[in-house]
Image (cartoon, rainbow, N blue to C red):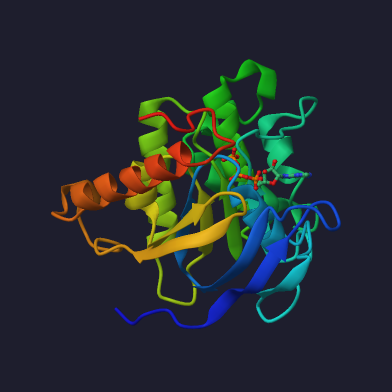
Length: 267
Ligand SMILES: Nc1ncnc2c1ncn2[C@@H]1O[C@H](COP(=O)(O)OP(=O)(O)OP(=O)(O)O)[C@@H](O)[C@H]1O
């Protein structure tokens, strides 16, 4: 399979401080993400994972350096859609209306077809007419995922989207993300930047893993996964366990050596 090459997302020596002159949340991050890649971002709490997503979404601008998406500064809502951990469904709208809300410009038959397609994909066709309060937290999160997918963005930004799901739903949803991102020829595949705290999830879903170190957030390592896009369960690949152990050890070390971490100096 040919390697994807075009840098759809470019970070060029990017630093960001939330307060002018304050300590940077992320510092000197340089990175290219080709079209169609699934990049999983892993790192201790506070290392700037969400900040990275918000920069790609165009919600914040770098204090130094450049972020480019398709060669231009990103504009909110232009080429990406985000699935947050804290799904933001509108409580006064039904499940179907929540999804319709992000598709205002589509003619009605097409809009309804999209709603049906993506609700089917997340296994929730039967609750289209329900209100969010009638659904479990996990089901609401799947609606939020369907809503982001239904917009069919070029880039899908996922911020711990499965953190609140039960183990079974989480695994099923990971399978759906894999189907979505693996299907289709290069060029038609969606680019995904996926933030997680789970090393296993990172290794199952990613083409590459970006490991970030904290305070300020920097690129600690970029790892091309040897089992990405291969048939079969990546967890059975001979390199899976050793890579998982290594990443765990690096994360553990980062947390134990961070003076601002609750676990500083332990272990
Ligand atoms: N709006 C903001 N104003 C000031 N500081 C902020 C703001 N948003 C984030 N920060 C700080 O920037 C740093 C990076 O935050 P960010 O949320 O990107 O980290 P994260 O890796 O996603 O954390 P977590 O894993 O806990 O979600 C943290 O120190 C955080 O306190």
